Length: 246
Image 1 (tube, rainbow, N blue to C red):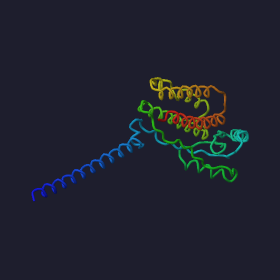
Image 2 (image 1 turned 90 degrees about the vertical axis):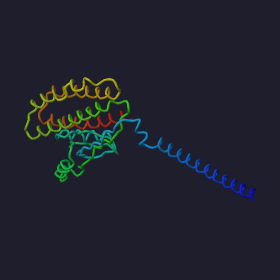
Image 3 (image 1 turned 180 degrees about the vertical axis):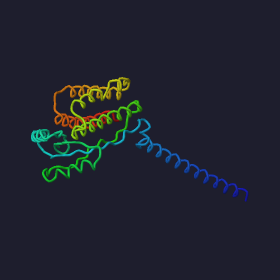
Image 4 (image 1 turned 120 degrees about the horizontal axis):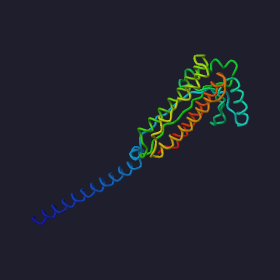
């Protein structure tokens, strides 16, 4: 009787021990799976990256899409002759853009007025997708640079409208262009690679604005130049954002 009792107790202990071993094995396996998933997940990878630059959208009047670049250039010249930007953008063909707007409704309103004579006219969305900054980037400086860049685009838009509506003449507009982007606004950018790229972009843009301010053009021609520059800036900004993405 005593032998059977201890024998049964021993078997029970063995079963409990095996259950415990099984539980430990399942727990360890689950923990390993969770760890691997965390390492592979975007949210975990984001810890090694900086903040995100939000998506930006502008709306352009597209005057036609062409498969041949030379044909697009000819059409762009025709658009410029009529006071439009005449900017050629490669996206599923070569698009000829005449103006850009920060608000979709404004773009669609102009397109609706063009439709009776310009059947190809349509509203095209310029979409600058969101990008994640590398961890080493100075996030505060980058966000300030982005705001300064887009503020310059908005200023050029206001000036082109002011020229078109005779609120400002070309002489007054040129004076504004000279002081629109002073070097003091970005001279402090240095150190990390992202800041250096922004500084180079601002330096080139300042030179372009100063050169435009010195050219001898009419109100009509200057308005077209500003429209072109807005589109160029937005496509350059998209390229810059992609180049600094983590």
